[in-house]
Length: 518
Ligand code: XMP
Image (cartoon, rainbow, N blue to C red; front, side, top):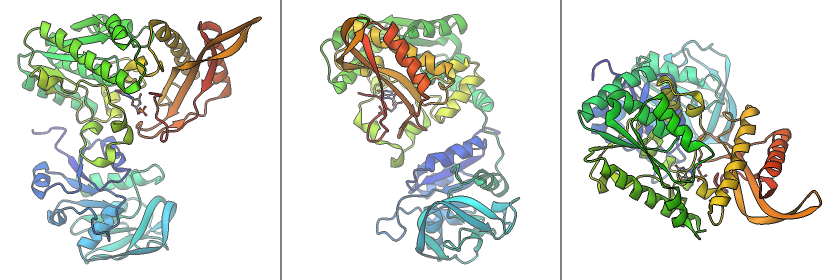
């Protein structure tokens, strides 16, 4: 591909750091395309990838450990610039004949280093000035390999950064990718642009242009079917495909009766009225309710919903005749092969997706968002002209309100939750918090409590309000909500939602809790 957005590529070798994904996001924010691969990617694959530079991530392992993760040493001799971060730097040192030792004092957290040298990595940094950085290490470099020199230091890490400008190999003991290293971006940009010679070509505008062309070539005159959920990923997938192949994209929207208030009509309005897209609504609310009758076990609920969705989708798709392609909104974090990305919740809960469908229906997959992080999908949505309420929509679980009506699901209980949830969202929005928090929603508990309304004793339902801050849903913390917003939410729910006489706020973090209650 000539002049393509994939021409300037950085390869990130993952040694298991919790920050690897952050490195990739920083590189992409600098408008350079990059991919994360496991540390032991073969040298042939690396050459095939033709990166302009390689970043070796940090990692929890110790270079002295017997089973320390190692990459092919030859990557340091390819003539491609390499930046080793923390563990990556220590490994580089060891492989090239330097000496790694135990630090006298381990450094975790903020630290100050002195820049010794205006090497390309520290271009436009003031020499001898103290720089604040984020450290997290127990080992240090005692002797740099031949050809290297220390370019930054502090008392506990005499080699806080090192460079061999001739071979274009660099190492930093600290983490330039985290926000706690205020000038970290400058360092990464120096690596990308000065050292590797990358051009900032990764923009969503160029992504759309190139992807539309790729999709047209791949799909030819065939048709594509796409399941819509109302969420950001499937919406952006559909709009992008619609841009590429027009009404040969056929969307199927299954209303399972487990959606939020007005959600179904909003989705239909957007796609039909605004985008004039080819969309089929399947109203399956009754069917799902019948199938979920009497079911209280969370896993069982998820399995039933996943299974029924597939059956309905498959039936509808078959009615449409012979369709060769199935579109899915798979994102990059779902396809990264490294273990450090699979948080515990990925395996603890069986997620609702259309896995298994393509083989079963003999369809080929089209996944136009496969290379994108979530924030890039949002940018792409904006690029495609989607309204910002939609692009900035909070995540919503595939099984919908079924995992937020704890215990048995009935139409009445779903309606109670829908009303309460709409109030939570409305108040969070009017407090200006909707886009600041990760998720905010209501949960209907399977208990009743006593209350008084007027002179009457009541015995009614409890709504729990869950609002969390998170970066990627792998960990989350409960949001410290202003009391007046909580008060308004509680008052409005108790006063206007029939069947609720108590509201509680969830103050659990993940882990050990999860974001959803089921
Ligand atoms: P938990 O509850 O595991 O949720 O902390 C993590 C994130 O995933 C969302 N979630 C789901 N998303 N299908 C989805 O597509 C599901 O079955 C599902 N379950 C949970 C949840 O809302 C949170 O953002």
